[in-house]
Image 1 (cartoon, rainbow over the protein chains, first blue to last red):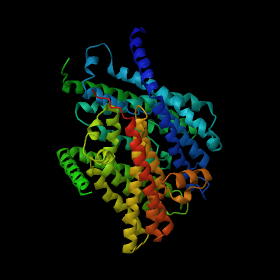
Image 2 (image 1 turned 180 degrees about the horizontal axis):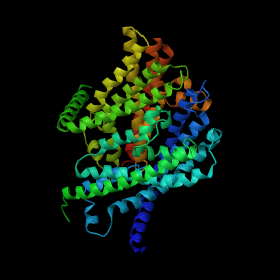
Image 3 (image 1 turned 180 degrees about the vertical axis):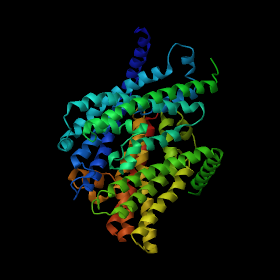
Image 4 (image 1 turned 135 degrees about the vertical axis):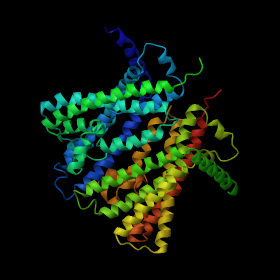
Length: 269
Length: 263
């Protein structure tokens, strides 16, 4: 029963090793993220001057939201998985997977999990350094249901993140260069994922539309659960929509893989 | 000087021909940059729906600042980004040998090889944002103010170029500059903030005084908003000279460590 999982365990371990080689890059990236956090603190700090709350939340709640998103980003975001998949298709490295009993999606996902464990662990280094400066701005709600729903929501968000990156990687079967698409999608994902500003600051009708898009569930949704920006009933409704998007994206990935392989030409030995 | 101008013109011609060959790519990249600029403007728009002022700047003043920052960034993208970005990869793969063998200054050859017309096209959009904001503020700058604005934008470009070269040159010391390249954009975020928003001693010391990320956009924007201010002008010109000097030093130090990777 568990034997098929052994090969993906090996892929996970190899992924862990290769990502640990780049630990300093992740650490540097983590420390540079503190600069982004500084921009957020300065901008929103200035915006809150003279107003008690923005969108029903005070400065501390807003800054807590952005810190939470930063942590989530290092644990669940797809960093360059789309490029890696694209390179493997373009260079013919996927040919080996066509001849072996290995599911390419699960192989890449195992490596993704390993990479995020490394980057997620390393983000705590810069956060520890920043803690003396930011701790007084942090305020988290303590209701138990937020963890009960929030943790599954984070795992599902990771699946959505990876699935979207994987789909963009699959585009290489049709297009020579996907970098443009990836960065365009990054802009859309940052905006509609709530990384630029909390989505609840949008006009109500626009916010409602975003709740039906997959991007909402990439980052904003788990972040909003943990930081008290949404209530229990909205979170329950959200989990259902999030599961729908996970299933839909997994199906899309399979479709793109099968259709893409029809176009793929494996050359050489 | 004329020799380098001719080399640059040849590279520019090659880049434009290449763009015409990959028109779809050009459209996608133009949209990418346009969309990122729209995201920044949307952020301003959303915040100002909930507040009147950010550090004493009203909505259109901040839009003018953000437009100026975007203008400098688009020029950087258009003239230098691709070449400098590729430099990181080339050092890792050993393809950097190609530049060392060329008859000319290595830094010039490696950082000006490619032109990105999509970045330059979007600089028109960024300029449009500045003009729109200036109109909304009923500004009527004199010709000398516009000339000074152009000079300061040029200095800002030199500073951004230098910072980018320094960031990517880290690849000579690190195994990969994969994370460093992206984080450069984080530094650019500071240039969209008004100087008055920096309140603490630490943030002022680091972002206003030590790193030139705030002054690059604030100085030209203030010139349009308030006219010539000699402190801001001198400050920016001096910073451009100093940071360019540091970039040249770091780049050439880095080359000493380069050991190639090819056979």
